Image (cartoon, rainbow, N blue to C red; front, top):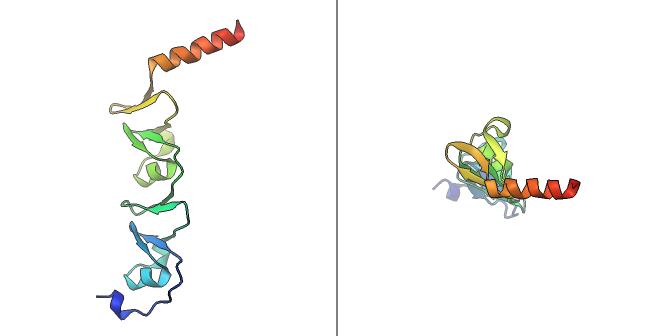
Length: 119
């Protein structure tokens, strides 16, 4: 295999290349990747199948009915956050046919709170 023909240093500085994690830039290049096409993997970054390196902070978005864990993951899937997505906050339900819809009970809760606040 290609990996066997490389002699790489054993310092762990992981990189994400096309969704795969490599122990350092040498192993990534050994596997045939240009290191410029890879992303340095930090503690809160996961290598995912789309080939993006996204942080693992949960701040979900609804895009075309699908939920993505955060803005990076939505953009990685090819969505334009401004055009195609809305932040999934309390009361937002991701469903097909809408970027996301506020649930009516939640809207009523907000309206009642506003009315009480200004009464």
